[in-house]
Image (cartoon, rainbow, N blue to C red; front, side, top):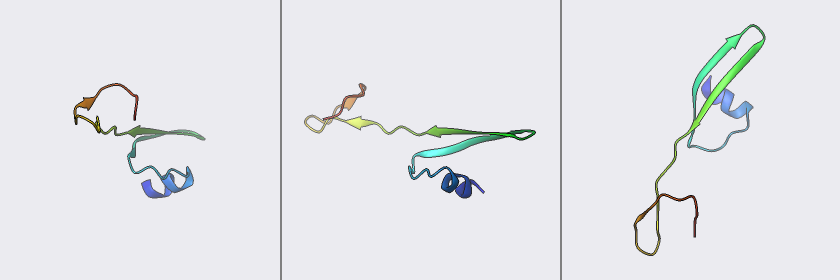
Length: 54
């Protein structure tokens, strides 16, 4: 069922997971989360906490 929802929403990002599905009458809420991966500087290998990328 989860894969069907991901296909229906056309989500191809493997880092997105469905955390909760709520139904209230004719309304359905799908809660998604994206697991973030740590980014490392290519020059010095330090962890980058900013959102900037090289």
